[in-house]
Length: 475
Figure 1 (cartoon, one colour):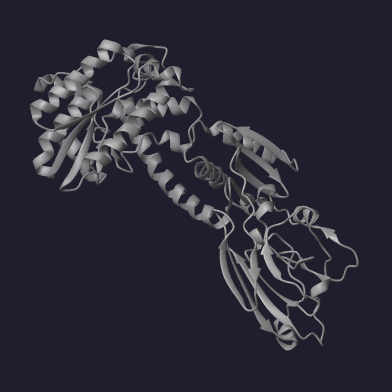
Figure 2 (cartoon, helix red, strand yellow; figure 1 turned 60 degrees about the vertical axis):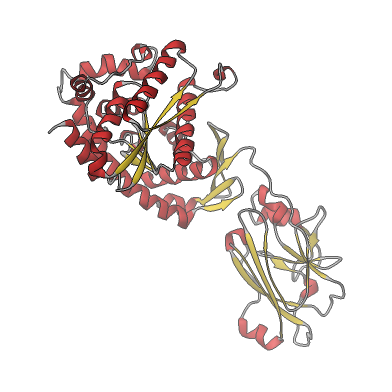
């Protein structure tokens, strides 16, 4: 099978391209990206696609990088396609912290996405080949990666496509020589300080003495694992939507529910939580998840584990929590004056919306409802609650508001008062949610702490004249 047939088959198998799409081809000037552009150019009429060349200058390799840009610009002129170039600031690496290789890759990807939007390209074609895939699988294996890492680079992710992912580096070089295509070789690809280059020049040649087709075998393995990973990921997302309790800057799981899931799903639940909090999984490796598991299996009642990128995992109150350190703490919502009947909906913060309904009722309805004492638990966990209040002893204005220092309530049936701070602790309300916990109060006292108790002041008796039914829910 020719290289062009292979590429066409890969495009069809993974539904990479559709008629009338504009494709932004990332061309560095190396053989892979040059061949990628030329192959798509050869297929452009059959696939009914339009091409745009994009090149990013990292300001890392001086004159060599200038010549790379010149070559790609000349290619665009020769084939009469639109050309878009980007360039990093000089000595940008002195201003940023982190791996230069990772930072440069992120800058390039940001440029490609921005360029695709500007040129109205729906796809971005990258030149990764089968050898790159095999190297990535080995890198992840050496780092102790899980299934996702061993699945390698996906052929399609969002708008990024890799049409050469099943084509070998030798086939690409042969194609360039046969077509007389000019390309440039990045000398840093021979620098053995980089793990990928050592794998390419030392490990893979050694593995070929055991299996001459090791690259194909690794690519096939990654494809099989990618399909398995897809099924597990779908199952994990369903479990996440069912089990995760999302709060500002924090995601909680009930330990009881969490431990009922298989180990492979538990690990993915933690990864999904981290990804939701920090928007990516950079620097989060399998060994970090394994470290968390060891603490979980140790039998400790509580633990705290610091992970990269400001992620903290801790267990307390039979709850597993994944938190983004330094996340903004929610401020108290504005007090709302209550009238009867009342039907209101307010946002407590970016995550939670509260609905409160209050309507006149009577003693007969109270008895019929069977609501005498509610289940104790945070309203953020309970989600909804219904109670009855007597307002016979209430002469002042009713309010829905957030807690204030010194708030107390005289719980139903008690002579003394309890501090709200102690109540919220007993309800296991996370510290960052306490400033937005909703209370129904009058001018003097707390009347209802949802999920906990109503005040003795609102006790219902057979002769109560002003009874109301209250329903609250939080989503």
